[in-house]
Amino acid sequence: MKDFKGTREAFATAITELTEKNPEVMFISSDSLKAMRAVPYAEAFPANYIECGIAEQGTVNVAAGLSTCGIIPFVATYAGFLTMRACEQMRTFIAYPNLNVKFVGINAGLIGGEREGVTHQFYEDVSILSAIPNFTIFLPADGNQTYHAVKEAAAVNGPVYIRAGSGREVDVYDKETPFSLDGVRILKDYGRDTVIFASGFVLDRALEAAEILKKEGVSVTVADINIINGKDPSKIISLIRSAGKIVTVEDQSINGGMGSYIQALVCEHDPKIVRKLGLKTFAESGPAKELADAYGYSPEGIAELVRA
Image 1 (tube, helix red, strand yellow):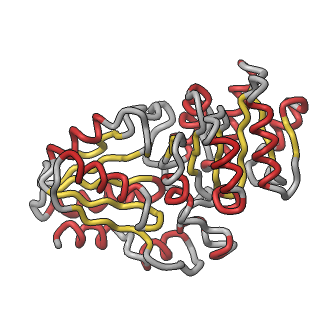
Image 2 (spheres, rainbow, N blue to C red):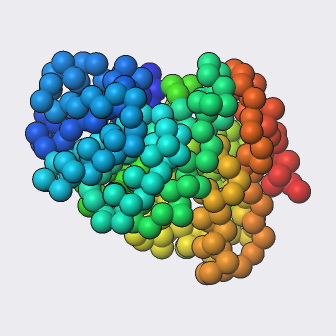
Image 3 (cartoon, rainbow, N blue to C red):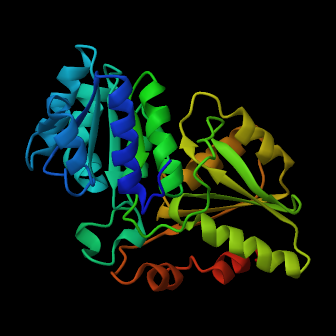
């Protein structure tokens, strides 16, 4: 397996390998071929690539039609242009009939905002799709996990949204680690006084926070939540029940995202204190590390939330 430079390259590699094995896999682009690093794909599989231009609503409708003919379409472009501009189409023409269409949204989260600012850094996408039935939401933490997430999405029967980044993600996983279909993977287990549920592009920061707290004698577990609205959350519920308190950390709006998903499971299955770290405002632009630190995602900031 190649060494990925980021989530976009991982997508391009994964869909190429999928198409080599299954000619019914297609990439449906809304002027996003270069953004998805998929030019070699279009050259290798011209019959499996459809360019719809800057018309996300129409792109989703094209994918809907193709899926009714047995095609497995992947629609991949900027996260907000899918979940906001084409929200009605994703809801009514994909989710309502439960069609087998896969979506990859790039530049999701705060960390993607270095070049393009608030118009192109999206932290509402998960909240929007969480409200729509039938969508399974994948939250890979880095390029290596994105590669496996694309492969797993192709095997899911029904709509899947894969939240991808900008290429500034820190690698947490090695290339061989599969995407957990349990929806959760424990990465550090120093004790269960507090369980930190983290997802996506701030997972590495939660892991650093655990090391800070360990030195202070605070026992925490860090778990990667990589699926929302999965069909079987039993492993997540089991971990919730073992926790004293819970902290959630996500590069997403604090409302309606992974933290809200965990909060709902806690309320239903084992009520206890949950503190959420997420975005509460529109963010500025800036270099990924400095930007994340400024909005509370520094390892020390996460550790302080656990202490509190």
